[in-house]
Length: 555
Image (cartoon, rainbow, N blue to C red; front, side, top):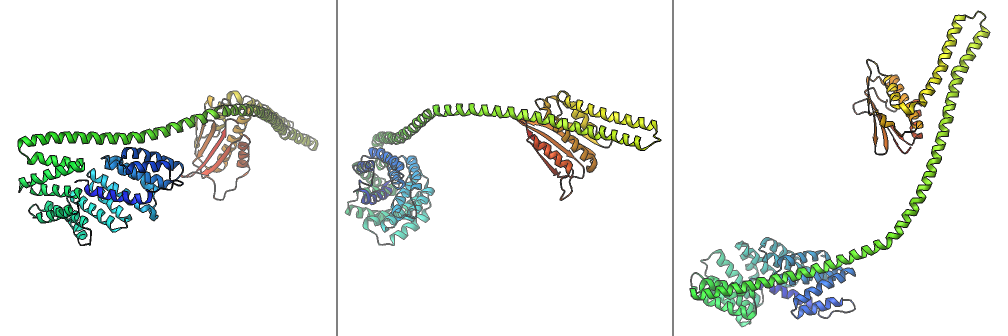
């Protein structure tokens, strides 16, 4: 009785699908689908489930999503009919993306699928969900008979959820329509039974017997079984003998129709209504039928799950094997390619690096020589020329003053030698060189904070890079002293992976708006560019100037 109304609609859907697929076009339809359909029509639903699953995979390979969706709907209906409510729900939900709501040819399968979701939810006692799915089913239903059956299912779901008022409203609306006798009997009995559930004092006997008589006239055995169940419930307290009579009728008919759920329900009632001796016999029968039904449904669930698992496992194994073959086939080629390209790349990189280092060393030597030559010219030669001019033009030359000027010239020439020596020794004591340079700009009113100036920081830097950094730091500090008016300066030196970073910040007045970079900062930028790095000047959020310098250690 529980599945009666729902199974009616399943059969309707099967019939509607049968009209389309009973004579499949073998040139377009997959042969596996035809085999599955034939098994389903012959009642061999376990074999049908297996072949529908096989057909679904074949259609997906051929990118025929519509046919794949049809296979999933059939699998879902079979699973639900065998009591696998969760499996039926899952399959129906999997099927939904394969159908188009704007395609009329898809509507019959959408209505079938949503109806199955309603049935499975109803079996799981999720009545609110069942109502939602039945209402979605109505959106795609077109013929009046289908609409009537689904509306009846919705009303029954409201009834089971104890919303008797809404259920009676829907039943009343259906009874106002011109409907076939069997449909009238079904709705009338449901309407009367719901009224009695709402108010047990209601006299519904005439309506129940009227529905039963129509079903007998129409030879509707399923309907008669449902009527006997309602009459048994109705007379259980007021007329137990009558209730026992109708329950026995229900039990016999359920056995004849092979309706295990209805037979189990009848046995449960017989245990309550019968005398002690008979009740004990019926209880043993109830346990046997219940155990058999649970075993059968558990077997079906496991079988359906195993079919799907084996299929998915087979697909996964094939994909894994294909992936392994592709990997194995490409492994040797990739390895050879990497070895060849790696060897060539390493050779050319080493050769290019060696040449670059040689050119940089030569350039550094030339620049150092040029620099020294220029200083000798500017300091010594020009100084000597000035003294010679003074001696030629000044007859009364003060000898003491001349000696002082010559001593100054000597000190300057010695400074050139000292500076060059200081640079050459930078490679071994660059930490102290940086410290001395920066500290020389500190005063009582100007605090300089140095962070990260460790000996290990400067290891592996070439003399060229050290020289350029020394000049850059000198130019930055000179600019600070001339223009910033800062009294607190922070310099931080860090190595991050393969990048060397210098961060400078002061609390001075920063760069003016629309400031154009002068020669000092331009020279600083050029020096950093020469060692492959970059420098960035920005005003701090709270004032002052921030300078970020970074260059790759591979320089």
